[in-house]
Structure formats: C-alpha cells, structure tokens
Image 1 (tube, rainbow, N blue to C red):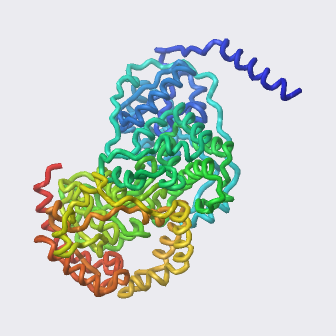
Image 2 (image 1 turned 90 degrees about the horizontal axis):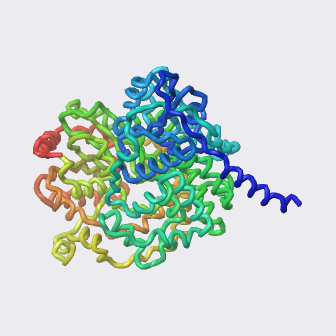
Image 3 (image 1 turned 180 degrees about the vertical axis):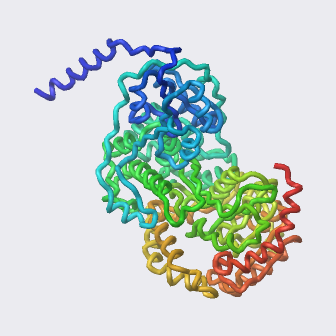
Length: 639
C-alpha cells in the first residue's frame, strides 16, 4: 500500500507547489538593517549558509564582487545563479567587477550591518576582506565533514580520522525585502573564453548550479565510457598543451586513453571550485550513484575491480576536499604561501623574499618529487640585491593538488606560464631537474617575459652536431602542433595506475637513503624534514597517476630548439657529482650546454643533483655574479 500511495503523494505535492504563488520580493528604499550576501566561490542557492543567515535580516542584497567576472566559466555560473535567485526570491544578482574588497564600498553606501562570505576556499582573501569590512564581516562554511587536518601527516592518517558526512541544507523558503541599488547586473558581463585550454568548452558547459547538477547526473547515468567518448574527442591543437593531449587521445577511444578520474575531473572541477554545487551535494550524488567510500578505496584507482564511474566522481570530490583542507591548514611548510586555482585545482605560490620591485623577480621551479620549500636555503644565501623571490609549486607535487589527469611537459609549461601572470614584471626563471626543462620550455614560449634563465642540473634532451642537421631535429614543437609524430602507444591506463602505485610503495621507505646518496657532498642538508615532506607528499591521492603519466609524454623539444628561440642570458650552476645522471654525464652535459650558443655561462660545482639545496652558498654566489646580465635584459623587455 505504501508503494502505491507514494507516487500519488508526490504528484499531489508537485501539483500544490505549481499552484502555490511565488514569493515576490519587496524592494525597499528605507534605511533598514540591510545584509549583503557576497558570492565568491559559492555560486549556488542550495546548501548556502550565507543565504540562511541573511534570511533573518530586515533587507538583503546578493552581490558578486571579483576580478574574474568576465571569465566565460564564471560568467555562465553567475547567469545561472541570477536565474535561480530570480526564480526563488525575485532577487537579481548584482555584479561588481574588481578586487573583492570593493564590497566594503558597497556595504558603506548601503549602511549594511553584515556581509556574509563563504570562508571555505583558501583562494579567497578572507583576511583582506576582514580588514576592509571590520565587524560587518561574517563568515560561514559548508565542509563535507567537521574536520581539521594536520598538514604534517599523510593521507592514510587523514582517512583514519574521517567522521560522518554532513548533510546538505535546503535553501531558505523566503528572503527579506530586496534592498534597492543601482549596481550592475549580469547583463554587464562580457564573457571571454579561456585560451589554449583543451576541452575548455566542456568545463564551461557545466559551470552553473543547474548545469553542474545535470552534468553529474548525465555522467552517472551514461557511465564513464560513453560520457568520455561523447565529450572528450581529440581536441584542436590550439597550443602545445592541447596538442600533447590530442596526441594522447589520437585516433583511439578517449575513455581508454585518458586517466581513470580524468573525464570527471576535467568536466566538473571548474564548476565544483566555483561552488555551483556544494561539496556535500556533489558527494551525495556520487554516493547515490554507487561510489565506493574513500575509506575502502584508500584513494587508489588501480585495482580493476573498483567500480569506475561513480567512484571516479566520488574521488574527484573527496580529493578536492582533502586538498582544500590541506591548503587551509597552517604548518611549518606554509610560511609565505598564497593559494590559487588552475583549471579548478589548488596550487601553491610561495613568497620567499620581499615583494615586486623594479628589478626582475626570481621565480623558482622545483624538480620531480620535490616542492617549493626546497628553495628556502638558496633564498637565504642569495645577495640582497635580488629583492623578490617566489617559488611555483608544480601541480601534482608538494602540497598542491594532484588531480587525476594526463600530465605532459606541455601541460606543466602552460601551467607555469599561467602562474607567471601572478608575478608582475620581467622574471628570471631558475629550475632544477625537470623544473629546469620546464623553465627552458617556458622561456621559448614566452621570451618576452623572461629576463634570464638559470638551470640547476636540468632535464631536457641535448642534440649533438649530427642530430641537429637531421631533418626536423629542431622542429619538434611544430611537429607536435601538427601532430606529425609517431602515434601514441602507451600501456593501458590500469597498468599505468598500477605502475605508479608500485613505484611509490617501493621508494617511500628508501627516501632517507636516496637523499643521502643525492646529497653526498653535504648529507646534513638531506635532513629529516626534507625526507618527511617528500614521503608525505608522495602518499597524497593522485600522486601515483603523476608517475604513471610519464608514459604519456610526447617527444621532447630539445634544449637546442628552446635556446634557438630564447636568446637571453643563461646560467648553468651544474652539480658535477650528480648521482642521478652520474658524475661523468653531469660534467659532459655542462660542457655541451656551454657550447650551444653565446651567453650561456656554466659554473661546475662540487655538488649533487640538487645543488641549490645541497650547496646553496655556491649556487647563490654564481647567481650573484651573473645577475647583472639578467637585469640588463630586463630593461629591454616590454611586458
């Protein structure tokens, strides 16, 4: 009987809802106690603590205030939010373009008694807002669980501490009268599409409270394979980044070529980062779809018996929440940290010294398995005329997010280039190991931004005289853009996942021993803090996929090709006792680099693979003597 009555009751309830009159907001011009809901990364109506708090005010106003309002993804989400607010409360969204602290002017002009801001996302400058708004600054949160995190402990410790998931809250039924204002609405938006990003149309399509929910439901109902093959066809080769993924997909089946969590990550991460659904709503959908809990999977994706569609989505949500908590926590490694998002994923920019000045900024990029903390010793040793030093942490390493996507060298080059937009003026790039190879690629892609390049035991191929003469030897970038490469023939994805897990499981216990080997000149610098940091970071969810992605790297553009494009000064502080390449090979690479072209200065140091951290005084001395060349080039650059 209950089964028969349930559909009738649902129909009756729906009929009553359709007949019930919608609440019409009363606009007020009186100087009442107005409260503002400032939307930031919470572009939704459901499960929204700010709306619930403002529901008790005398009057209210919904406002988005940000510098990225015209980004196509944000603009789409704002328009859908505006439609939701109008439908539920007859309350159009107001838009203020500029620094989020401009909300203080709005609050002052309206004599607002409170401004409600979501404090979940570490990219939101809550301290600046608090200073601007004073006692009117009110925060709310909507975490997945009531949980804090110790940033020094690894993911296994995090899993063991998990409690119950908090249920989403319904949107308020009614809101108070709408305060009058002459602020612009969503009609003022001028959407600008993200450039050079593969499948940007897919991620943009799902940005919006309704679009995201519909997208998640479509993904779960279709299944990972059909959804992927429909949305993630071979992207256009608008950039080396896009071309590298077009090469991976090739003429194969996208669902077989892309990483386990990649379709869900690329489709929905941007919208989830914008808060188009709360993390609690998204997690609830994944679990109802059959996602296995993270306490069971332990964040690993390689066992082929795991249910792949819903669990992949659940992992995207869970991993995002874990990295949000990690970024929000304060620990010994967090001094000078600022957090940003790239394609929806959290990444770390560390200020190591000073602030931007008329001199170039030294921008540091670490190597494989390291983090931006590895540049702290070098910064302390640098001459004082190098006034501003920052370190970019690569996506997939350190404390930064490790999304389950296909990593290529061109993805990281694009990522570093985008990160440099956070650094004003000309820069000097310094990179170690793969970080050096990436810096070389960035300098070739954007020579107008780079005043100088410093390569500490860099990765990257070097062609000999005969190889340079071979047809196409210096045209790898053009071949990549034209997809004039041998077809991708990597192992199946489950094998890459398993390989990454096995490598990490094998290497983690040996990290202290390996560090002593690589820091044999000054083994005291291979200290417990360094070993613990590398071990902690390697257990983060998604780390194994980063290693497995090594099989997806397209043919390398050689350093010869890079330095034929980038004509600025280059310094090579080379550790001559490199245990990774072997000392003989390290010395030979230094000699070969010096012969590539004029204005490449080589300093052979008694040091290992990470000379900037093992012998920072030697590297700092080499940089100090060479720095005037970079300053001279910086004067000629127009940015």
